[in-house]
Image (cartoon, rainbow, N blue to C red; front, side, top):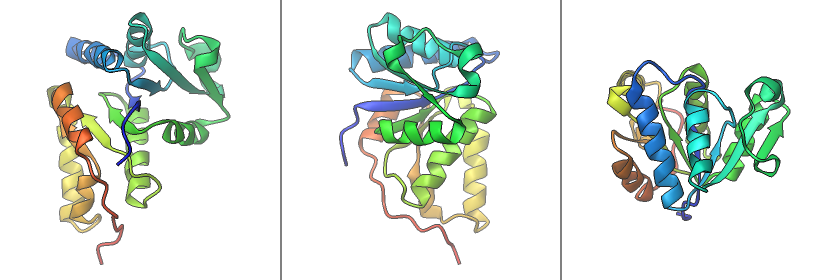
Length: 192
């Protein structure tokens, strides 16, 4: 497996109601900066995205925002112009994030965060990438999603071994340990 230097983080453009979501986002930004990881993220200035990007910049971290043209005027972060990529649309944004990243982490978020996670999961399932994909399960936020993915495998809609295409943890150090030992196996999409 290639070494992880550039990590794409998917997270909410809202902060959520639980203050712990913001706290963990700050802790993740600090961890990334201290360990000299480059952050690739959605480039927004609002919500957990804004918290993440601003904290990384405040710590002198390496930040790359990737934002679709449709969101530039209203949601652009305080990233220097040479650290922001504007894409034509959401699909191009996800492809750019894939190309620029060695691993992916999903923090709590909404529909956009879920869509980004599922895109990277399904792309891994068809072997478009072999990078670690992780859910930071803050306060059990992703427990229902993990249960749903297990249920899909149990019902025969995804091979059970494809559940190994992502890792989960409740704490940042544990998440990085799991990502560091992640080994992508050639998956199969079909169960029957």
